Image (cartoon, one colour):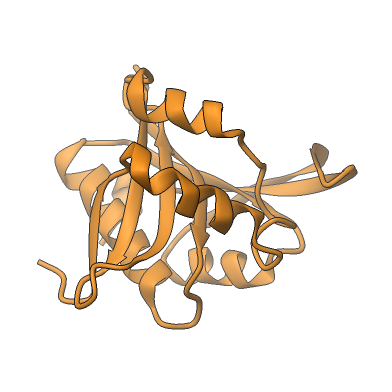
Length: 163
């Protein structure tokens, strides 16, 4: 059990926080923006996706959220679709990533856990590398963020690499 964070399913009452965190200028250059309706659909009807809120354990205040995709993937490949934190530099992201890895590889029996990272998001890329993710390649100008095409790194960890 972790003594820093709690992770639970996102509730509709959390969506104002989620949208605000997504739109924060420290996050928006790196992540795709969803509408309120897209988030509502994700928490209510998408059985292939987990929409989770990360809370500071002491205060129970939201500090971030994460989307995990591929729960029904026949190849046992789970995607960390989005990570966004309103509280940075406090270790919440690292702890959340460690818990997701443990859950994916021990509980879900995933073969592969993967994430896409915008090429100029050095902070996230460094975190994922320090947690054992490997760069698989660079997709040049693969997504459009804020009216600009961005290149993204594909990063992954295999179950055989999980410690």
